[in-house]
Amino acid sequence: MRALMPGWPIAFLAVVLWLPGSLPAAAGQAAVATAHPAATAAAREVLEAGGNAFDAAVAITATLAVVEPYSSGLGGGGFYLLHDAASGRDVMLDARERAPGEASRDMYLDDEGNPQPELSVDGALAAGIPGIPAALDHLAGQYGRLGLDETLRPAIVAAREGFEVTPMYRRLAGFRREVLAADPVSRETFLADGELPDEGAIIRQPELAETLERIALDGRDGFYRGELAGRLVDGVRRAGGIWCRSDLAGYRVVEREPVVSRFRGFEVVSAAPPSSGGVAIAQILNTYRALERRAGELDDLSVPGLHYRVEAMRRAYRDRAEYLGDPDHVDMPIERLIGADYAAGLAVGISPSRATSSASLAPVVTEPEGPHTTHFSVMDSQGNYVAATLSINYPFGAGVTVPGTGVLLNDEMDDFSQKPGVPNVYGLVGAEANAIAPGKRPLSSMSPTFVRNDDLVGVLGTPGGSRIITMVLGGVLAATRGEPVAEWVSGPRIHHQYLPDRIEVEPDLLGDEQRAELEAMGHEIEVKDSFGNMQAVAWWRDGDRLEAASDPRGEGEAVVFDPEVP
Ligand code: GLY
Image (cartoon, rainbow, N blue to C red; front, side, top):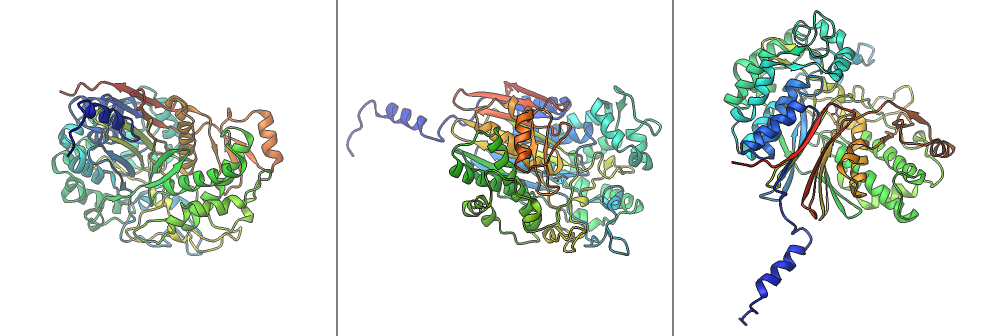
């Protein structure tokens, strides 16, 4: 071989360093954004003890389970989007609840076949088999560096010593006061003599601390088998639920391939079914891009940009209702739905000047989804990162805390279609893909997401029921415009979900003129109170700078710091 010029290695390296994708693999700092300062502090403690982003995810999940009992918990589920720096791999950890083995398609219908909505929202019959304890064990065992004894410690301390009631706690406990008051353990734990506790009052959960200690000691078996499993099943059945020991022993998290789409030179990585998030976001972005090809580059916040965004949302939510469900139970045309050809076809039917009536699209039933949930985003100094959206569905879930466990039950069964395949009063049919079946996971909107190009790694997500998808979309669009992370989480929001056929906006989004123009196009507009609680972190690779931001609508905390790993 011919001898290399003396300067060759340096010149070669310099070229390699500038090739796309070859920028530094980690920022050397860490960033955390969660919905509660105690969870952010737990992540910091674990990262400073030498843990990685996955250990931090365990600590945050468990701490949120203690201090945000209205949002998520050991009795709930969620989706974790993971990026493992060593392998370069993205994976979605599906810890969604599963329907118990005794669940049946019509379990929430009365003798006349009418849905009884309270049965799938309040009380033990509403609870799916939880996924969070299995996720903690999986994250620690497959990805973490530290033991659960170390990563669960901050949550155990918080459960035993207590946390302070905040304005958000009071608002959400107020919303669910009657349900909480009806359950002896929830009443004792979360209320004060059946009334709302004062701001600053301390909520202690010693039984939850013991349950966390069992998981720290025995991993998933500490929850899904043995004495605790027995208590859970007895308590649930005594309260009118249908859990069995085999449901708990058989629960598994599943690693799934995330849904990936491309937009404006960015890669958008998001949750796969049983979340509808990734598919819907891909479909909306593809349709918007097809419309941009026709109309020229769109200003996202102009009237044409908002009109086209809404029309793309309308169609994606219609398809979501018709096609999506648990991938282990239903065949879904995912490749077609997220394909460019399909989006181009949708774009053909979108007028530049007139709103489409949702009634003119092929009809399907849409189901309302629970309004509460939580999200966190974390990145470590080695380039691992996690976006996780976790839920027990309604604030304080089903309102039932199982005696002797500290476990507050979810009401995620409400995310199934209650009455699939039967025309409703509007003659709409559909939602068969999301019918209840034993062992099935209900369709979700939770959308933990990464948005990346050579300059940026963005990690984001939010709670908010069916609005999660359009809020995350707004954050992705802000990221592609190069806005700082604080803007992703705080920018005013716009939402359309096919039915009801109206645009929902936050008060600050539209000026009077913009609103009049959209109404003249045929859009109905409803101005809502602010919604969402987005948590995001970003690494701007070009300047090697980390940012983190917590939604000003919530009570969360975001930090960037040097973990000074020992
Ligand atoms: N329960 C809210 C969701 O899964 O989207």
